[in-house]
Each structure stands twice: as structure tokens, then as C-alpha cells.
Length: 499
Image 1 (cartoon, one colour):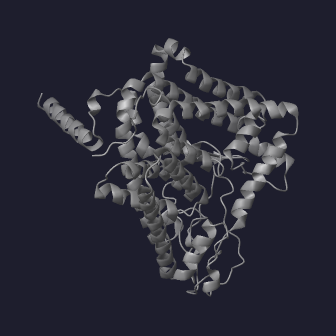
Image 2 (cartoon, one colour; image 1 turned 180 degrees about the vertical axis):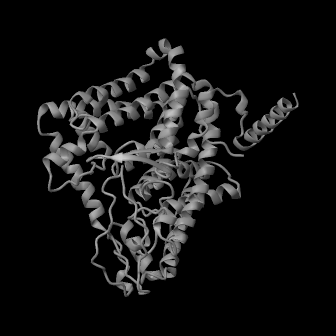
Image 3 (cartoon, rainbow, N blue to C red; image 1 turned 45 degrees about the vertical axis):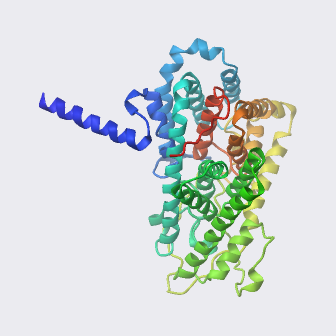
């Protein structure tokens, strides 16, 4: 009896602490809603820690935290589908998404890569289950959106601070300690590019997009506390530190959308632009100090700043003429497959106490050219015949087809690295048309909260720089929440909550 009372007392304390932390009463939530509360935290662990079960000629067999979470969320939501199947059958939005998944599933019959196709379709099926369960639970989940948003922002700030730690520790420690990917180490530019627990910097930058734009929207429309302003500064600075042009360009596109839909006065816009500029200056200062402090690198403070600016400007802005830096001839370590990447073994830059020059001191055109080449090859392959143009080569089959048709230009585990080109090649015009209709319906459903278009546009822009599902599941979870919740929202309600 005494033990039972103690357990009850401890449980009450836990529930009280949980309510205080997340701002809602956990005890009154359903299992599906409770699992949704973990989304803003688990999405950051899209690559580390990782369970690897083996590999074949085209892919690694891996299980990440975010994939395990997606499976748990779908399992929690599946009973809701059984109870509400008649209601779901009448939903046009559900029918549209179901049709896209059905077309993808049917293409398993002709895909040249059955294994990858089945696994990819499995992820799509889990996302479909989560979407339908969220539709069923929308009336309760829309009340959790402010909580989910606040948790996402808090976790973004924590991860941003960890990215600072990762960049600094990379000055002295090797990659098997810092968890930096092979193309993220100081050996490349003289300073590290943080990827935290993601596979590479662009995915970490992509994860920062939604929190950064939500905070930026608050800055444009509300009087914020000093803590929120500092959070905005930290998150945007961390985004710049990734040196991911895709993430930074996507953020810029989102900011432009916010300026357009909010139609604020020139003073507010000018102030917000100064904030962004201040974040960028802080970023290059940090990169410069990190490069100059690295005992194994010959990179200088000015050289690192020149490198960063030149890389982000695609080689247009060149400060190298004002420095004494020389251009090394080595090639960058590229993550040619955004789904699977080998990490650096943990070697140091120098073994004889001599300073080594970074591999690059400016814009690296190879990183752009390879994406453009793969997109061109994908479009060329897609247009090979009418049947392929209409139905595609099959889900998961793009890499295999490109390797078969262009063996001298495509690596063994290459993927398209452009979501639109890959979707067109794998699902044809039929699947691409359905996908476009889903995105259009997403814009339509959120028309009364147009500022959220900034998040949608940002994700759409960065889809030009990578493809695949496992490393970017947060995009689909955010889209699911936006599509479902804002279908039922009226007036000027929005995601944000300011305490």
C-alpha cells in the first residue's frame, strides 16, 4: 500500500514537472498526441546515433532515432485510422495523399531497385498513417501547435549552441570526437562547418529553417523579450555557420516571403535586416577566430573570412586579393550521397607539427556542378521514352538507372540530390503532378495564415539541393501539421505563442 502511494506521488510529481516544461497537461493527452510532443526533439537526431545493419551495392541499411520515432508515431496513430476510416474516406486531402502513395507503391512493380524501393515506400506509408491520424486528431492537436512550436524553438536554440561547441572543439579534436562529417572538418576551409547530429551541414541548416522563420516572424510582428531576441540571434548565426548555401538561400527566400505578406513599414524591415547582417558578421568573425586558433592549419583570420564570403557568393565576392592566401590544389571531400555518408576516421590535419593549408580558400564549384550535372542526367534519363515520362522508373530506382545509363559519370551510391528531378524520374509526370497538387493544397489550406508560406517556400527552395526522406523527415512532419491544422483554423490565428 505504501509503495503504491509512493508511486502515485512520484507520478504526480513527474506529470507536474512535464506540464511546467511543455506548458500543457500531459495526463489529458492521448497516446498519439503524447508521441507528437517528441517530434520537435527527435527530428534533430536524423543521423547520430545510428544503427547500421549492413549495406549492398546501392545503399546502407541504417536506422536512426528519427526513423524509430516515425515508426512509433505511426503505431500510436494506426488505431485511430481503424476507428475513423469512414470519415477519412470522405476527406479530399486524404484521398489526394493516398493517391500519391498508391502511385509510388504501384511503381514497385517496375523499379530496378526493389530493396530501396520497398524501404522508401515504407517511409511514405508511415508518413501517410501519421497524416491520416493527425487529420482524425486535429481538434486536439491544433491546441498543441503552440506547445510543439515552443519546443521546436527551444530545441533549436540548444542545438545551435551545440553547433558553436562543435565548431570550437574541432580546433583541437578529431572528427570521431566532434562527430563532424568528412566534408565538415577544418581541413576543408580552415574552420569547421557544424552538422551536430545530422549527416551534413545542409540538413542541420534545414532543420533550423522553421524555428528561425518563426522567430523572425515574431520579431516582425510582436514586441519580444530579450530572451527571444537572443534566441533569434543564436539560431540565425548557427544557420550561417553551416556555410550551406542551400539552407541560407532558402532562409533568404523565407524572409522575403515574410516581408511581402506582412507588409510592415520600412523601419521594421530595416531593423530586421540589420539583425540578419549582425548574425552574418558574427558568423564570419567566429569562423575567422576558429581558423586562426587552429594549431594544425595555416589559415588566417582574414583568409577564413574571405573563404566564407567567396563560398556563399558563388565566387562573386572575392576578398582574396587583400590577403596573402594562396589557392591549394586539393579536392574537397564531398558527400555525394545525401542519404549515406562515410565519416572521417579521426585523423588530424598534421602529423609532423607543421601547419597545413586548407583544401580550399574560396568558392568550390564542384559542389554546385555535381548537383547540376545529376539533375541534367536525371531529366535526360526521364525523357528517354513516353512510358518513363508518364510513370517514371519506379520508386527508389533513380540511382540505379543513372548508374546503368551513365556509368562513367555516376558513383555507385549516387542519388539525384534534387527532390524535384528525382521525383520526376522515379514517379513520372503522374506522380509529379500529384505531388504538385499536394503542395498547392498546402498553400491553399494555410491561406489565412500566409506568413507560414515562408516556411513552405524555404523548404521548397532547399529541395533543389538534396533528395530523399530519412535525413529530412522534419519537413514532412511540419507539412503534415501545417496542412491538417490550418485547414481548421480561421481568422488571424497562427502557430506562435509568446510568454
